[in-house]
Length: 266
Image 1: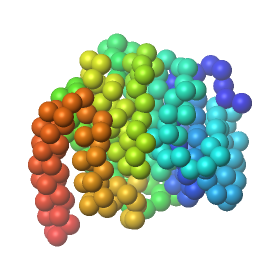
Image 2 (image 1 turned 30 degrees about the vertical axis):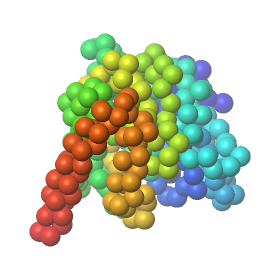
Image 3 (image 1 turned 180 degrees about the vertical axis):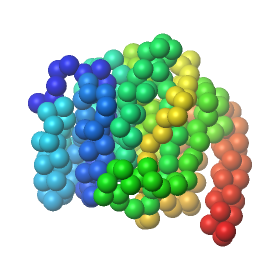
């Protein structure tokens, strides 16, 4: 049973997990800020996956497990978790991402001191499973920077709100929900929240470790262009903003791809 005394609900969908899931949950259990509840939604995993998820969920009484009877997609799983959230703050962590131990502590202190409704941070890319979280600190990892402040217009021009870095007040969520596409489903949630007039501020020195998996949808650039275009025209406030935002984002994408390609050749 999850703890009744918690200040933040953490949303984590999972489907047929591997080693990264174990490390990800451990990084939450090791948080310096103790008053959290992790809401894990098993999105129709196979029997092997279910067994692993149940074992991990039993490690700490602050973990709440919800099971879908079939695979419904990451967006629907996140929406299921949102319906159980009741804490002051809501945070998101994908089942293959890792948080530094001061992530919650730093972000909640920053939000309370500044009275902010929403904050975010950067990500550092990781390509293999770390068998000790301390080993990550020893590596020089590629960092993707987020914007200092994000509103609906800046988001549509450059939607670099990294899901596992974001925390917002539950009161800021309103009726916002994630989309149902296989990828880019957070786009709908951020659009709905930011369209209400809320802005997200970057928390200084906040980041998380993002696992880059070959073969994943996000790793396939062609597929991501398709899902990005679909997200703009399905989830943007109107078509004028969608067109402007999409072509602006396309320019950023081409620039980032060129820089990334140049870096790999060195």
